[in-house]
Image: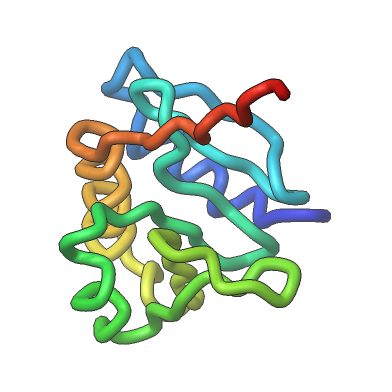
Length: 117
């Protein structure tokens, strides 16, 4: 099992009121795209949450939250939440709302194209 099926069921249930949610296998786990933006996901048994830039540092200070370290590199704007941080449905919903906020407010910067010589 690459990711927690139980957590996937909980997230899908919690987000079923939205019509703009797409589940997609990514990073060896499962990602939830909201409004076309990756917002939350599951890596193994931990929750991954995208955070708007102005709340990123403060969110890192919350219990059970840590910077997402994927393949040895910190992915700024992404938070990993350890299992005790989303045991209750209320805790999980709080984290999902953080990801939803990202999907609704954040501007995704498109990579600059290299000029052809």
